[in-house]
Image 1: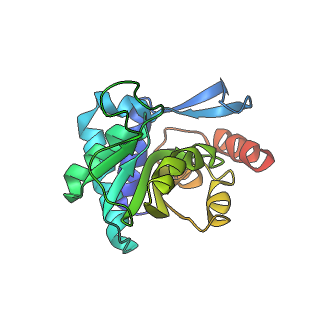
Image 2 (image 1 turned 90 degrees about the vertical axis):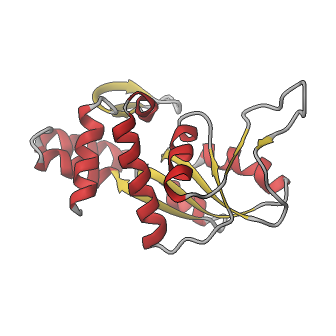
Image 3 (image 1 turned 30 degrees about the vertical axis):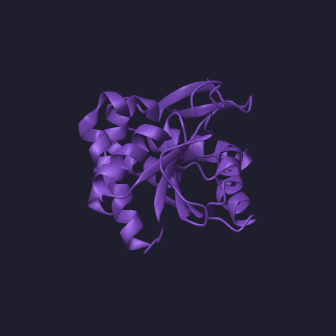
Length: 201
């Protein structure tokens, strides 16, 4: 792990985005770790770090695309920050169509046939990514790659790959936990407990 990724991992912990305890996930599972990246909106300096790290991953992996597309809600401020960092245009699929005005399912300017890089905060199983992909694909956009800040390493990458989509992540959960142990923010035994839970779930 390079120094910027290490600094980002510890910053996320220090502002409360990474918590340890017993947390009920959307799936119903009880997890020993909870990652809440919605807090980033209250910490612009750390959000800027996130944007720089994601822009660097785009460059490192030579990801080519016409537009960014961010997933509401947690992914939207990250997407805006990445758009500002890279100067690339952004669109976003709505969670529900408006019943007034344009009644759009996708906000922002785009053309059918354009390639979109889907941006979100993290990935677990990949379900929310498929939900967000649907209106983009229906609009004739091409989505081959997804970029997230954190991969929880619970099968999301393989589920995307099965549909021909490549996952890129700034941090894996293993990397994040390793950085916290190295920084003295987390005990090695707690790290091992979390990793054992991930392997079992």
